[in-house]
Image (cartoon, protein in one colour):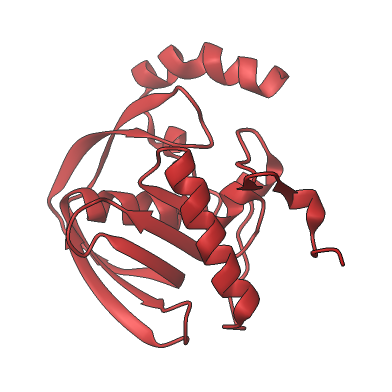
Amino acid sequence: MQRGHSEDLNMSGLQIMTYPAPVLRKNSRCIRKFNESLQQLVKEMFETMYEGGGVGLAAPQVGKSKKLIVIDTLEPGGRLALANPKILWTSKETEPFNEGCLSLPGLEGEIVRPKEVRVRAQRPGDGEIITITADGLLARVLQHEIDHLEGVLFIDYLNDEERSSLEPALREMEAA
Ligand SMILES: [Zn+2]
């Protein structure tokens, strides 16, 4: 018997899509079915995130254009799988943080974002609606991953100076 969607699978599970893969720029679809295959995707996304040494991963990064993210900041309460997450509120106070992304290997940029966020989402297990208020690293990762669901990458926020310093690497990836 064959498993479905074998084109997206390799020996270690899912494959991370890197810039400029078109799926990274799409607005992803809402999740409506909270079934076994969603649980399997969550499990494989966690594995792929840990393998890549990431603290968060969004489904479009593994070629699935769906509103699903997994996060593990390695802090208490920092391990989350969220379906259809939406930012309800952000603090006025902002802070800079050096961000990287598994889909932009080797690149980093200092990005200013709100310090605190409130997010509404559904639990992938049963679809139950939950609300999370976070600050620090968790707030940062939530914003970065939720951006992925709308085709936004951290490089979109770079100031001109940082943009020009990353430009050669981006061009190289675009040409690959
Ligand atoms: Zn990312």
